[in-house]
Length: 312
Image (cartoon, rainbow, N blue to C red; front, top):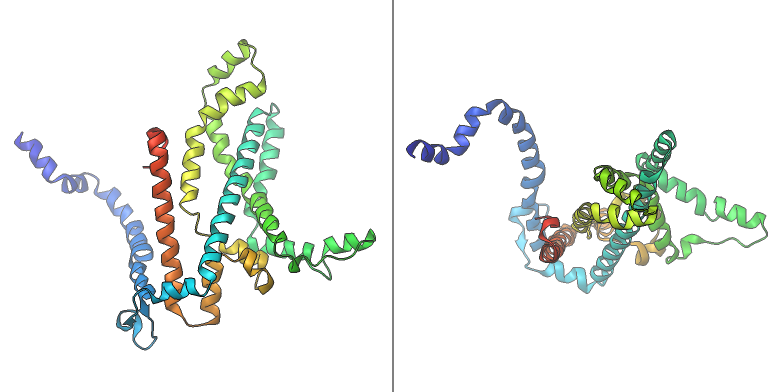
């Protein structure tokens, strides 16, 4: 008993002595994460201060919640929050839904080489930079030189100024987000489907089940925990817009801000056009807190319904 108590009391020391080489290899990663992820948390003080470059972060005067108040009184707080949540929810549903369909279709393909080629083609857009995608979008929808207007004029129709129609860019952004991420997201579902018990499918074949019945009663229930886990992980980022996607596709076009502006692009433009560090810090702090609240709330609901598939 005495020896057992001693091991429990010195658990970390004993573990360090036993696996000193492993802890030593882990140390650089721990230091890197601490320096890059935890030390910068001190900058959150900017959200509650009237920042002055001369006084610095810790020397600047406190202003309470004035930065948050200005963010919402200006009218931008609610609009960028709404846009960020709606875009992320729609992108999540569309891209994950299409990825699930693609994974099921690829898994049901019989040709080995055709399956690999199809999966590679669908996966290819993931490696294309958003800068290239932005140039691609510009070459399509440019009013003067765009391929869309070139086709319309060749068919006898009038040109369309897509950059003057904010509502159209909702569909454009959702489309290109799905186009880029469907192949990458489908890999996880394909791996999950591959791990299902093949005896269940063989038994279904013996019972005379068709392909749709096997998908409904075997495949979908089998990958249900994976689907829920992925949705939970993405919901934690529901208030973090993909800055590169929005900025490269929309750019600095003020006509489209009301329909496409998200928290990340708003913070970037605020930093570029002014020196109000306090308000931009307030926007990012507000973004992080809401992300935390959303993921904890949704996870609690999932845990109440089925604790086995909850994230924590």
